[in-house]
Amino acid sequence: MTLAHVQPIAGVATALDTGRERELIEHAKRDREAFGTLYRRFSPMLLNYVHRRTGDVHATEDLVADVFLIVMRSLPGYRHRGIPLRAWLLRIATNTVNRWARRHRKRRWAALESDQLVDANEPSTTGEALEEYFQRALLALPPRYQAVLALYHLEGLSVKETAAAIGCREGTVRSRLSRARDALRRQLKERR
Image (cartoon, rainbow, N blue to C red; front, side):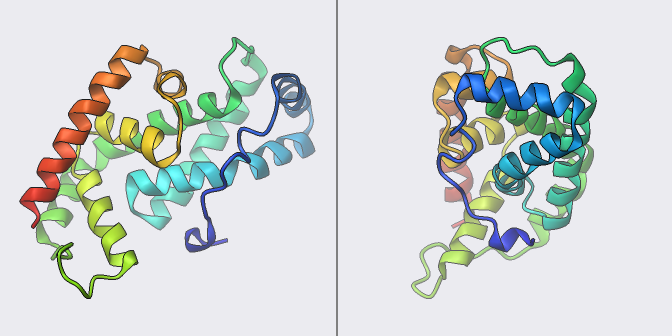
């Protein structure tokens, strides 16, 4: 499956109630087939999220594989603490992408500076080109801002769920969202 065919699936990753979620996790701890079910249920969401954060199909595939390796290793010690499984997976993905972003920051900045960006005011701009334009502006932001914008606006998580996914307080998420929106506006103005 290529990332071009992965579309956001509203509600799929949140469709499990707490009891079914716990049951799936317990089965996945000892059964590869159940882990496969977990993978199939949550990989489209993680592919979308990671791709929005990286903008790179190959890095996305590698990073999502890394996320599921971390999940497989961490699953035996996983204890349900009231945080939805989706938030736990997004926290692992966020941390994985942030580590990747720090390692690739210099290379990413060089690529952003050398690329010609699409003019969002051009009438001939396609939806795909406009999406790329906004993604490049998002990628130019610090990882902590990328994470809150992507989780809240693109993945549709609430402030509470975003806080659980990145491991901070709700007030911190609100303040980062405000700062991230301001920074994104500045990025978009500078690129015009």
